[in-house]
Image (cartoon, rainbow over the protein chains, first blue to last red):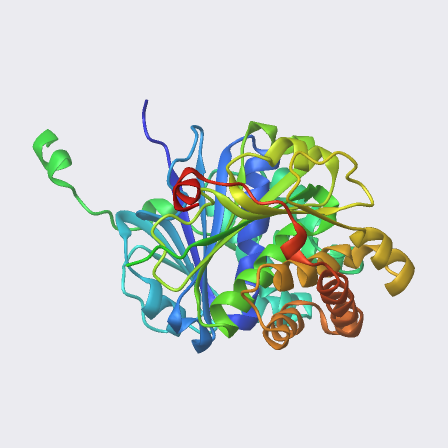
Amino acid sequence: MKDDRYEIRFGGSGGQGIILAAVILAEAAGVYEGYYACQTQSYGPEARGGRSKAEVVISRNEIDYPKVIQMDLFLAMNQAALDAYFFDFKPNGLLVVDSTFVKQLPSSRAISIPFTRIARDDIGKELVANIVALGAVGLLSRKFSSDNLEKAVIARVPQQFRDINVQALHAGMKAASEVDLAYLPRSVTTDEEKEV
Amino acid sequence: MKDDRYEIRFGGSGGQGIILAAVILAEAAGVYEGYYACQTQSYGPEARGGRSKAEVVISRNEIDYPKVIQMDLFLAMNQAALDAYFFDFKPNGLLVVDSTFVKQLPSSRAISIPFTRIARDDIGKELVANIVALGAVGLLSRKFSSDNLEKAVIARVPQQFRDINVQALHAGMKAASEVDLAYLPRSVTTDEEKEV
């Protein structure tokens, strides 16, 4: 059976809400899209540093190993998390960064969107930058319908913040929809060279 | 090196907040107690049923496999989750149930505490039953100081609900402190029989 794992890592600082974003994405996948999905956090001796990392693995088949083996998509909400967790990146993986805080990109397959600036200036609440990012990542991964992303957000955020989070999600999807992935450079693997 | 994995599963219905409880427990372990810790959620085709499951693995050593292999402790917040996820239970594992909703116990090594009743009647907010349970599980596992559990709760819940969640945590620890684990029956493994 073809291994169709799609592997996403989220990196950010403690207060940036990446665990919540990862939980919502996994629920969108597992509960609403009908995938198998695993969502993990791991903490080691470095956990006091204030960086945090969360992962989501999605598949049409049962998932034997629930952590990321090679990233298809890496969302980095700041430079420190990007520098710390940019490993196991697939040759044609996609790097998505919050350009409010990330200035140096270790890959040319990168999409820069100012998630925190959008949350602050367009939504009026910096705290929902994680949900803006979730909207963008959900769309860029091409694994989710916007309806199912919205259902997962609504099921998980406190009711009094429901509207602002839905607004944030849509702002992220809109920002991502303006990106043309076809313009990103591609790694040429050996197999593809042979076919030329 | 001795394998000192301590493995906890949380089971409940969608609205019972077990993922949040598991995230907080993993952060108490990884960020405040200095363990390695992994926290996972998995979703399969059954995810629409409204049951949910979350797991935490704690170790002094690096964790190679982040999901539960055999449970040291299983927290079941209702009967459906208990029935669905009571597998891979260690012979001398500990079953902790919310006796508000669980009536039938598949093990005699069980502690029954009415988490939801305590949350509703003593704290005045049924929604914090997950944090009452977290306090009890944290204490019963013997892996956490109450200070570090409290720090992890405060770091993770919204500020306007901070006091009520801390109160809930302490109510759970108090209920658990009234349990004498020494009175639980123990499985006698073959190795122990030989020593008699």
